[in-house]
Every structure is written in structure tokens, then in C-alpha cells.
Length: 143
DNA sequence: GCCAACGTTGGC
DNA sequence: GCCAACGTTGGC
Image 1 (tube, rainbow, N blue to C red):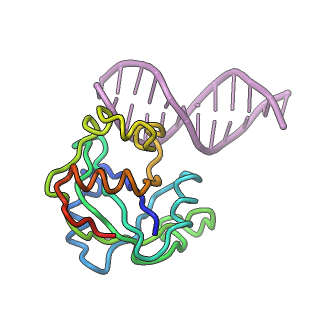
Image 2: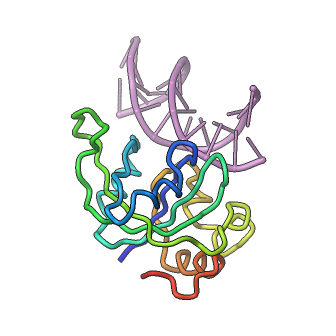
């Protein structure tokens, strides 16, 4: 089991929209960065991840899970370079965890969100995952 | 809206 | 294959 973080600009695709998509989930389309794509190719069914609002919000708002393995991105117009997974919303954080909180906490100084600011799909360690769940008010984080 | 960081493109 | 130019991301 691995953990991930997905960035989305809420005015393009928000956590509310992700939740509206229900248990079937949605394709995480539009990633055109090799590192981010490779992260998606490495994902397994059931991998948990954070949903992060970039540009506006700047906070982690919810927990997702991978519900379909990497497959061609349907928005890539037949370009075989670009794949994506499907993810679905699992639950909200009781309290969103902001980028400011994360940057202020030495536990997260090596977190990709801090060190690789622009990477849109990034790995999260188990320690980071559990600590953010704790800060977010989840007593029993989904594993 | 600005601009730094950084990934990609393309000329050589 | 190098590297300058350029485009995009995303925090501020």
C-alpha cells in the first residue's frame, strides 16, 4: 500500500465535484508530466491519497483511493505517452490541513509538497500520511 | 497579477 | 547531447 497526493485547482475540478462523482470515481486526466505519470503507473488498486486544492484554498481537503489502474488518458487524443488512474473520494478531513501548516511543521520538511512544489501527482510517505490525517482530525485514517 | 521554479522544445 | 528560449505551474 502506497500513499499519494493529487493537486487540483478547485475552479477546474474541486473536491466537491470529486465527491459528486461517487464510488465509481473519475479518471485523473490531464497530467502531462512524466514524473507525475510515472507515479500514477506505479499505483495499485486501493492506494490512498490526499486531495489538495492548489491556487485557491491551498489545503488538503480529503482522502481518495485508486479504483482503476493506470490506463490511457482519454483526453490525450490517442497520444500513447499519457496515462492516468481512476480515483474516488473516500472521506473528508474533519479539518483541512493547509500548506502553511505543512510548511511550518518540521515533520514535513522532506515532503514532496514542500520540496517539489510543482509536481501535480506526488508520493506521500506513511508517516506523512498518518500525521496529516491526525492533524486533519481523523482518528482512524483509512489504510 | 507577478514572478520564481522548473519542465520541455528546438537549434546547433 | 547541450543549453538557451520558452511555456506552464502555482505560491504569494
